[in-house]
Image 1 (spheres, rainbow, N blue to C red):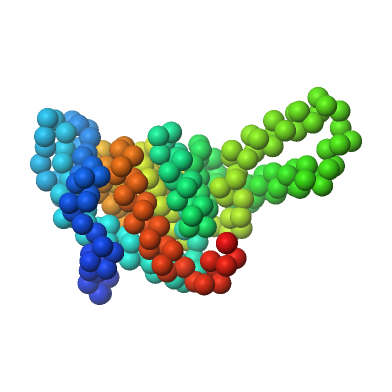
Image 2: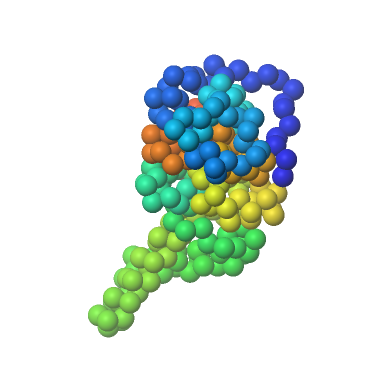
Length: 248
C-alpha cells in the first residue's frame, strides 16, 4: 500500500494545535537503534544520538496533521474508527481513550480473522453477549456452583477478547494502530479488506504500510499519550451530536 496522496487543500498544522516543543517533551522524536532502521523511514529522520535515530519533528507534525485531518473527516461523516494497541505498557491508555471517545478498540491480542473472517467473529461476540444476558437475567441459577464457576470463567475470558468490539456491527472504515510491528496482523488484515490505516510509524517499520503514517516513538508512554490526546480532541470536537448522545 502506498502512502496517501496529498489532498488538494493544504492542511495547516495549527488547526490541530501541534507543537514540536511539546512533542519533544513527550519523547515523540526518539526512534529505535540505528541498526534497526527501515529504509523507507529515512526521509523522516533528523539524525542520531547515542546510536538511536532521532525523528524530524517538523515532518512528524505535518504527517500527524494529515492523519488528524482524515480522522476529522471520517468522524464528521459518522464513520467508524477502530483503535488498536496491544502493548502491555500502553493498552490501558488506549482503552481509556477509546471509552472517552465512544470508539471500538482492541487492546488485548489481535484475534486472527477479526476482519478477514468478520462473520465468525460476530457470532462469537453474539455468544458472549448472550452469555452476559443470561447471567443478568438470573438464568445461571439453575446450574450447580461448579457449573456457574465455569460460566464465570468463560465470560471473563470472552470479556477480555471482545469487550472493546462488542458493538462493532460492521467493518470499520479505518483503524488507528499504535505499533505497526506489534500489531502487524491487524495492519495486514486491514490492507486485505481495504480499510484505511492510520498508524504510528517508528523508525523500524515501513511507513508505506499505512495510508496515514505518523513518524513517532511507539514505545514511550508519554509519546503515545500525546498522540492519543490529540486524536481524542479531534474525535470529540467533530463527532455528530446524535452519535455522542447514543454513546453517552
